[in-house]
Amino acid sequence: MDASFPAVSIITPAYKRVGYLGEAIETALDQTFSDFELIVCDDSAEPKIEALCRSYGDPRIIYRANEQRLGIAMNNYSGFQAARSDLLTKLDDDDRWTPHFLEKLVPVMLSNSGIGLGFSDHWLIDSEGKYMIEATEEQTTKFGRHLLNYGLVKQPQLLISHKSIPLASSAVFRKSAIDWSTYSEKVGGAYDLFLSSCLVSSGLDVFYVPDRLTEYRIHSGSGTSNRRLQNSLETLFVSEKIYTNTYFQDIASDYRNICSYNSKRTGNAYLKQGQVISALAYYGQAIKYHFWG
Image 1: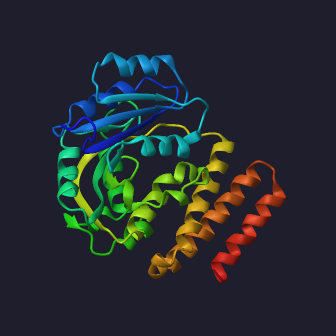
Image 2: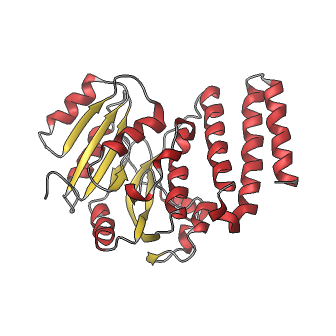
Image 3: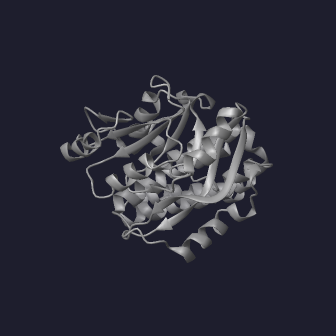
C-alpha cells in the first residue's frame, strides 16, 4: 500500500454518538481489500469518539474534529476534500459493511477510469443489527435495483428518477467527476441524491453489483418537526437542481412531478408549525409544478 495515496478514502461522519461507531470501523478494518484510509469527521469534537479511533492503533484511521459544527452536508464535504484518494466511499457511523464490499467495487474502478460511480445493493438492519429481510426486498424493488444487472448501467438517468443509488452507504465514486463548486450546505441530508446526480450527469459510466454488500441501519422515531421541515427544504432544493439540469431532460417530466410532491410536502411541514403563509406559498408552487412545470 502507498501510504501517501491510498486506493480509496472512506469518509465516516460522526456526531456525538459512539454506540455503533466501533462496529462501523471494525467492518472497514475487516475488508478483504485493505488499501484505504478511513477519515472520521467528528462534528461534535467528542472525546470518546477520538479515544475510540485512536484505540485501534491503526495508521489508516484518521480522526478529524471540526472547530465549529458544520452540519450534515459540510461535515461530509470536509471529509471528501481531506481525502487523499480520487476514489471516495461513505460509511456512516451506524452502518456496517460485509467483508467484500471494497473488493467488489474498487479494483473495477481502478482498472477503468471511465467509470465514475460503482454501487451495490444493501441490507437493511434494525437498531440491534438484525437483518430486516422483508423490508430489504421491498426497498430493492421500490428503488428499481431489482431491474439492474451486474455491470455497466445502460440508462443511468433512470437511476436518478428511481433513486436507485444508495450513495451514502453502498457506493464508490470519483472525486474528480464532481464539480464541487456546485455543492453547498443547502443540499443538507439530500447530499447523496445531489452527488448521485452530479456523478451520473458527468457522462462517466456507472457500474452496478447486485450483491448486498453493506448494511444500512434503520432507527425508530420520526424526528422533530423542525428536522422534517429542514429535510423537506433540502430535498426540494436538490430536486429542483435535477429538474433544471439539461442532462436529465429525458426524465424532466418525472422530476416535475417530484418537485410538485416535494413542494406540497414542504407546505405540509410549514403548516404543522403553524406557518400558514409559508405553507400556502409552497402549495402554490406545487400546483404550478403540477400543471405548468
